[in-house]
Image (cartoon, rainbow, N blue to C red; front, side, top):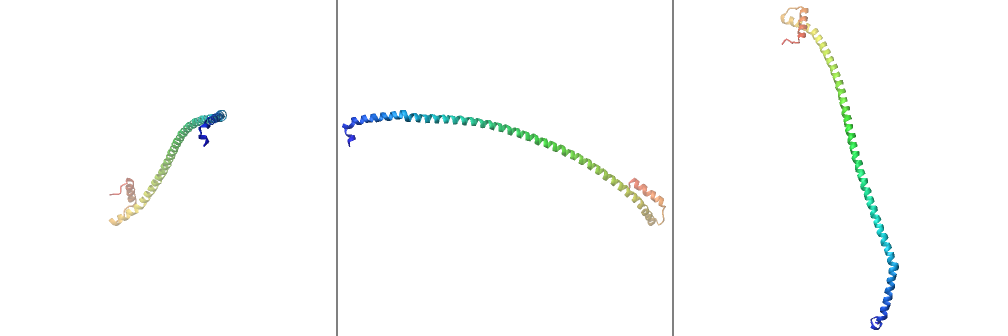
Amino acid sequence: MPQLDPQYFPPQLIWLAITFGLMYLLMAWLALPRVEKVLTARAERIAGDLDSAENFNRQAEEALAAYETALAQARARAHEIAAGSRDEMRRELEQHRVDLDARLAASIAKADARIRASTEAAMANVAEIAAPVAAAMVVRLIGTQADHTVIARAVRAELASGTSGD
């Protein structure tokens, strides 16, 4: 192998130095500036993306705070509306109850008046019926005919006093 022969070492070292020098110059003038531009552009894009992300994060936090504030206001307003509705319904219910109580009181008063009228009519009928019955009982018990006016007066007095003869 000729490359391992020591007599060929000096020309190989010269060619090695020339090739290394050319490669170094090519890398320094062409490749490395391009790589540096790419790395710089990438770093700038990353920094810009981080700034944008931070800006969006800040905007999202502001939007979240505004949303929470609006939500709290909406909840407070909903509670106010619900409380107002409950109060209004309570007032209406109380008014309906008062109206119903008044109608029921009027109906009860009318019913009491009808009952009183019916009772008075019945009592008048009782007086008309009780007098002949009492006269018949007197005839049956005593065996003699009693005066109808006296019996009718006694029945009316008894009915007026409210006692039943117990």
